[in-house]
Amino acid sequence: MTYPAKQDRHVLVMSFTWSLIVLIQLVSARYLKAWTNWNMIVHSVNGLLAFALTCFGVDHAAKSRGYKLIHNVPHAIFGVCFFCYLTLVVFGGIIARVMLV
Image (cartoon, rainbow, N blue to C red):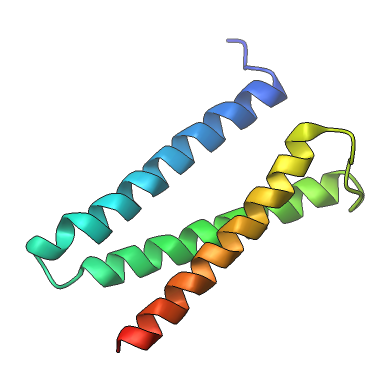
């Protein structure tokens, strides 16, 4: 049995996990509230899990490169931008939820 190349595994893992995370976030925020009061708990836990997994992934990627950012690689630049965006989304959601309570 041959395994996909390291880059191919990265694509498969990221595509699968983010598809699942986004689906759970959308369903919990939009549709789950009609059936149960657990929607915000599911949404919050999934959002924090997504943030934790992203932090782990960023740390792993940075550690494997000696904590040096590769400035001339678009994928690395996009990854840092995505991490910053996700951080803003998570903290924005927390602030919005606190303001609603």
